[in-house]
Length: 438
Image (cartoon, rainbow, N blue to C red; front, side, top):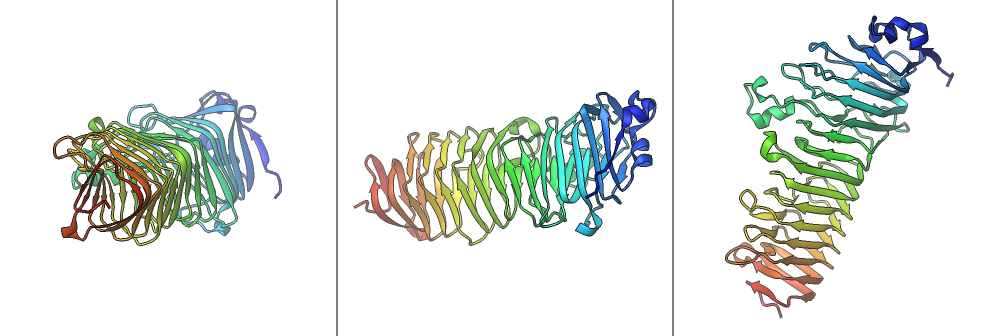
């Protein structure tokens, strides 16, 4: 590809760098088929939408860093680059780069989208920060970052910080319940339906977005999430689809009692999804921690800790294989909302080499509800079993357990078809109900 024309904004338009003229007018007036706009350190006023979709290559880059300021509450869009909604590879820019920028949305009532970017081959949204709570009441649901790589062979990287989230305004949607209105609020990061390539989300910080923190289940191309912090987002902190992988992510939910909206932690929504390492912390959460409703899933090396009424684990919907391996779970949750820390509704679920510890006398451990579940190499304990609480496993189906250690109470509900097949299982000091441990 021919190298782009480099335009130094401060050199060519000092009035733009001084804030006397808006940046958007300059970018629109000076874009060619291939342009790289360089913004030296400063505060640039973004007074309107920068719609550069009919280009081959476009970059907007801070040098070393620049701030784009939005002050108009009626403005909905910021940088809209590389292709319109539903763009094909032929209709998209080949390359789109947005780097080293802070979007200042701290003015009262401001809720503009920061970046919407599509590229066929090379997409980079790096070192981008959005400051200010996104106020979106009365507007169409927008997100801070929309991204897609439209060619199957294309690649992209996204590294953004969205720490201030969006305002929760259910009163702006009077025809919906507060829970229903969540989907009418902004998303932190959204992968759009025209995504076909590969996107890597590296060390992102996404917090306080009512309608999903990262909705990455859109499109057909894989998304790889590497690290980052995903915290207190509604619907899901991180929502993944077919071919997606989350590696070493940190997911935290600690404000359910104050937020007013509800959200789960990791939602493996559709297709074949993997989770490799990372942590899931639920100090104050009232929804599912790990929700598996995709066709197939493999979750390895995840560390889960729960002190709230959240259902830590829910595996349902679909008949494909689900593997939990080397998962460490510590639950001290309040059973007032969910009586069981986890529920498994799907056959062909394998729990292997996991450590599951339940500590609250007001809540039970795992509820096993589908035939064909296998626990292999599992240590499952419950040390809060006074009175009627403290069941480690409740078995309502045909379940096999091998090479495992169980403590607390294991209850087989024969009236509902529960049956256990045991092989090399240590049941010392375990109360066995509804089955013969020998």
